[in-house]
Amino acid sequence: MEEHKSINFIEEIVEQDLKDGKYKSIITRFPPEPNGFLHIGHAKSICFNFGLAIKYNGKCNLRFDDTNPETEKTDYVNSIKTDIQWLGFNWDAEYYASDYFDQLYNFAIKLIEKDLAYVDDSTSEEIANLKGTPTSVGSDSPFRNRAIAENLELFKDMKAGKYPDGSKVLRAKIDMKHHNMLMRDPIIYRIKHAHHHRTENKWCIYPMYDFAHGQSDSIEQITHSICTLEFVPHRELYDWFIQQLDIFPSKQYEFARGNMSYAITSKRNLLKLVNEKVVSGWDDPRMPTISGLRRRGFTPQSIRLFWEKVGIQKRENLIDVGLLEFCVREELNKISLRRMAVLDPIKLVITNYPADKTENLSAENNPEDENGGHRSLAFGKELWIERDDFMENPSPKYFRLGVGLSVRLKHAYIITCTNFDKDENGNITAVYCTYNPDTKSGQDQTGIKVKGTIHWVDVKTANTAEVHLYDRLFTVENPGMEEGDILEYINNDSLKIIKNAMIEPSLSEARKEDYFQFVRMGYFCLDTESSADKIKFNRTVTLKDNWAKKK
Ligand code: ATP
Ligand code: MG
View 1 (cartoon, rainbow, N blue to C red):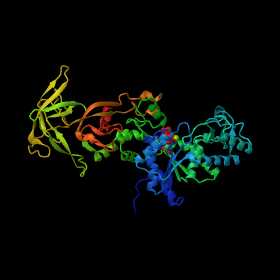
View 2 (view 1 turned 120 degrees about the horizontal axis):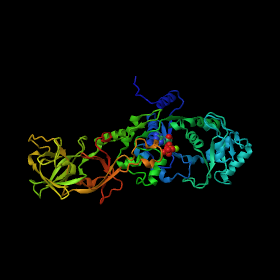
View 3 (view 1 turned 90 degrees about the vertical axis):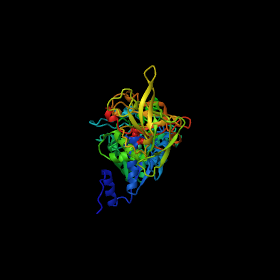
View 4 (view 1 turned 135 degrees about the horizontal axis):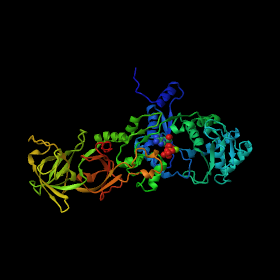
C-alpha cells in the first residue's frame, strides 16, 4: 500500500470529505481585498489554497473581496493578479464580491422577510453601548422590533439613497445575549455614498465583510473556505447566515497567519511606509511585498519552498526571515549565472604583463549546471580588485594581497604583490604585482598552491553600474508587535548605494529575468529601473548568512 506523506489538519479534512463523498471535488478560493499589494503572508494563503486545488484535482477561484469602496482600487486588483501569476498559480475563475451585490441585497431582503434582520437608526455609538462586553450581555436596540414591512420599506429607501451615511444600518436579528459578541445582532449593511472601483455609483449601501464573504463562498460553491485564525469567532456567524438563507453549505477552516521576522504583514502599515516615503513604493526591494521580493531578486520557487517548509499550523508563530533567505540561496546557487563585479574598486597593475595585450579567458557560467556554458572574460594588465582584498600590514591569517603575498585571480593567474601607492591621506591608490604565466587556470601544471582566490574586472573593458545593498528594514524582530508607531522601528541604514561598481563586460547584456551570483559578493539581479545608460543591480542576499554572526 502506498505510504502517505504527512498531511496537515486541513488536508486531513479534505481527504475525509472526498472519501465520504461529501463533495465530488473541492473548490477553494483566495479572497484578497484590493486595498494594497500582496505581501509574504498572503503568499502563504495563495500557496495553500491554490496548492490544495492542484493536489486534490479541484479548483481555486480568485475572488476580490471589494466591499469597502473607499480604500479599493483597480491598480491594486492588477498588482494582485500579476503577483499570483508570478508565484506560479492560475485561478479557475476570477470573481468580485461586487458582482454579487444584487444577490447579496436579495439575501438581505430574504432575512428581513423572515424577521431575521431589521433597520436600526441608532448611531454607531449607541449601537456600541448596547453591545455589552465579553463578560456582560448586550441589550436590545429600541428599533429591534420594527415590523417586517417597515424594515423592507426602509431598507429599499436606504438602497435608493434617501438617507445620509451613518444614519441607518441593517442588522441581523440574532441574540443580544449571545456568548459570542459577533452574534449580537451584527451589522450587515451600511450606507456609504462612495464611488466603487467597479460598480461606480450604482450602490450607496455596502455589505459588511461577514455578510459578503460566506455568501460569496456559497454562491461560488466553495467547499473549503480557508482563512486565518482571527476569523475563528466569525465561523458561527458564517454558518448562521448560510443556514438561515438555506444556500450552499460552504465551510470555513482556519490556519495560523504567516508572520516573518523583520517584516510587517499588515497592508495598513505597509501603506504607511509608502505614504511616509520610508520606502520608494510598494515594490521597494526592502518591502516584504511580493512585488518587493521580486524586484529584490527572490524567485517564485523560493517563496513557495519557504511556505512549504513552514507548513500549516493551528498556532501563530514568527518565522525567521533567514529561512526565506536560505530557500532563495538554495535555488540561486543552482540557477544563477556567475559573474564578477568589484563593488569598492582599487587598481591592480600587473607589471610583467604587456600593456597592449588582452586575453579572452573562458569562464564557466555556472559550475552547478552542466549545460550552463561558458562566457568570454577579458583580462589585461590593469584590473579592478576590491579595496579590502589588499592590506598594507596584513595579519598572519590574511590570505589575500599584501606585499609579498600571492593569490589566484579567479579564472586567471597566480599573482604576487610587489608594492603599492598611497596618497597624502593614507588611502591606497594602486597595488602592483607580477603574474606567473604558467599558472593559467585550467592549464596550471606548476603545483604552486595559494590560499586565497580573489575576483577582479579588467579595467579596459569594464563597465560601471550602480549597486544597491540592503539590510533589514526594521531594527526589531517583530515590528508589528511593538508599542507605538511602526516608524520608530525603521533601520535607517537599510539601503547602501554604490554609485560606481565595476562590472565585467558580459553584465552589460544582463536581462531583467536573469539571476546572478557576483563571485564572493552575493546574489544579484537587475533592478526594474535599470537602463542601458544606467545599469542598476540589487543584491538579493549575501552568499552566506552573516546576519546571525552580526547579532
Ligand atoms: P491586511 O491586514 O494586511 O489587510 P488581510 O487579511 O485583511 O490583511 P486580505 O486581502 O483580506 O488581507 O487577505 C486575503 C487572504 O489572505 C485572506 O484569506 C487572509 O486570511 C489571507 N492572509 C492575509 N494575511 C495573511 C498572512 N499573514 N498569512 C496567511 N494568510 C494571510
Ligand atoms: Mg481582510
